[in-house]
Image 1 (cartoon, rainbow, N blue to C red):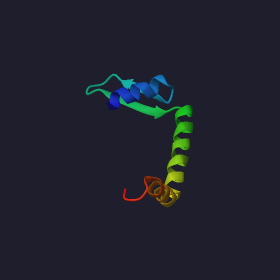
Image 2 (cartoon, rainbow, N blue to C red):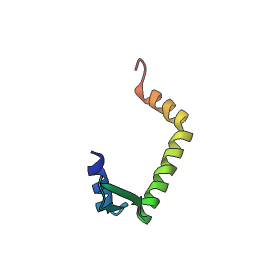
Image 3 (cartoon, one colour):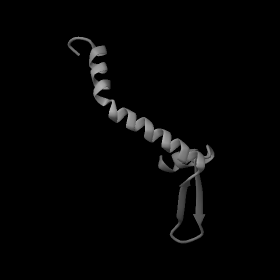
Length: 68
């Protein structure tokens, strides 16, 4: 599953893959400029969720209704 996800990220231009011709096999991945941009946005979203978690939980409870 990890290998498949890395392949998708490479195809989408998020990571670059460098395979070294050694035994045992060795591969390095690094974020591209677009991958770094995506990572920054994901970090901002995670920070927003963390900062607003109490509000999110209150809203979840409110929408669940009584007895849930």
